[in-house]
Amino acid sequence: MDAYFFENRDFFANRIEELEILSRSSRTAESSDQSTEVHDTAVCVRIRPLTEEEIGWDHVQGVLRDNFGAANIYEPRRKVNGKPDLNRTSFTLDHVYGPDSNTKDIYNDRVQDLVQWVGSGGMSMLLAYGQTGSGKTFTVSGMEKLVVEKLMDGTVSGKWDVHMCIFEVAGSNMYDLLNERKPIGILEDPFGAMQLVGVLEKKPTTSEEFLSLIDVAKELRSTETTTKNDQSSRSHAICRIRVVNKESPNSPEGSFLLVDLAGSEASADTQNHSRERMAETREINKSLTTLKDCIRARALWSIGRGEASQKHVHIPFRTSKLTQVLKSAFDVSNTQTCKTLVIACINPSILDVAHSKNTLRYAEMLKVPVPKAKPRPFDERIPTTWENKHVQEWISKNSGRPPMNPLLLAPRENGLQFCRLQEDEFVGRAMLTPGVKPEQAKLLYYKLWALHIDSRALMNSASASIETKSAETAPKKPQKLKVVKAGMFFRLDEKEIKDGAEIVMALGVDTASTSKGRDEVRWICAAVRPATDTPGAYELFVANQRVIEGKRLIDEVKLKYDIHTRYYLIAGS
Ligand SMILES: Nc1ncnc2c1ncn2[C@@H]1O[C@H](COP(=O)(O)OP(=O)(O)OP(=O)(O)O)[C@@H](O)[C@H]1O
Image (cartoon, rainbow, N blue to C red; front, side, top):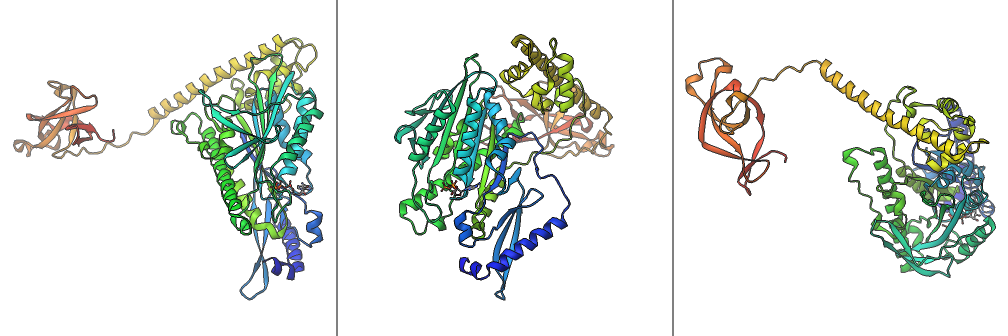
């Protein structure tokens, strides 16, 4: 297809331009940011610019961000009559950043909140995914610099000790990138947490020191030349940052995982490589598939949190070394919620659109649609129904003396997000108002929590009363005519219970009663009693018979004979 593209290069370039103009005029404006929900996993796309080399080779941009926030992929085709044609596929994710956006834009939109979250004792993870040469290392390196500057400049609330390590995961091996690539291991501790064994953890005190350690690691990163990128990374590089609050060492430590994933090459790209190289590619693809499965399973669990069916969610993190290392981010028993940002990196060249399509398909699979619940109307007793203006009003009314500045404590949070702030973060923000002491800040935090807990009880009782009401007011279902046939089991009317036999088996009609009305028809029944040695099991006493009126056989009971125990059991148990 490459030769065919170059033969028709101008056709493709012009046609893409035409189609983009057409698509702009045929669609009405809508928000470029599709994500308005509170969700712990966001998936964004970054389309890098064509490199100077690619421009020199006359490549055309085949992936574009349109004005409506979608990534459009144009794929060159050859019609049956030999004429060139284009296929367009659109992908819409949480946000698409085009070649004009820089790393700082993405940081401001998406990453600074993750740093704040870490500063308040939370856990964050940033993953860069994409084909070799699509800009993963460029993105993660730029982001590391901004994250480190923010963490080390002292403006994130509290005073922190920052610990960091950088290592790579290559197949099932792991190497310390701050310790001459010495092999390291991983062990599951008795509490189920994965601990790195033999890793050298540094404690930089300035951002310069931190960034020079990142440079050391970059140099050591395992690289091998491929057709795509001279500096192709064939391993996943992970920078783990832990922050420990010096003023309150017992508060939970925050952590940030920045992950530069290995290139997601297709096997076709490895045709010219060695057998080991192909095995390496398979291993990488397996780890990326497992990563997707873990992120999805975690997101599904968090959507259905609390529902019985979600209690036993399977997160297959053991399948690959990468997901073992990242286990704490997916672990549903972890009390720290992990906020995850995935950046799907795209090489925009039209010659790479097949890869770009795969990357965007993968990114789409990471998004778990959140079922849209009808929002509960505003109720001043229920903080989760508050918009930001209600949160700010509540702060003004309740924060005591001196009154706290609502713009510093909750600049944009709605009620749900406000309740989710960790105590340290809350207190730190409250104390940004001059004169506010920690005791006053904590008092407001507890007041919010008391209100939040009361509101949950209120919501539960409200939904219970709605259920009871609907049961009372619901139209009564017409009663079905009771069918009695020989061999069926019935619970008896209380008046008919004798010798512990609450259940009987209908054996046949008492012929002397057949001329009477339907309800007066009598049945010859055999007693069924609970088994004395096995709970939930019943015994049939065929010889213990009585004649019972049909109207005394109340509800049918579905029992099945169990050949192993020789008892009758409730069907389905
Ligand atoms: N947003 C961008 N703006 C300008 N140049 C970029 C951008 N993203 C990537 N590049 C350039 O594109 C080239 C490939 O980027 P990079 O090395 O980050 O790719 P990669 O996806 O990490 O590849 P690999 O998987 O091989 O490590 C580099 O020369 C990089 O400087």
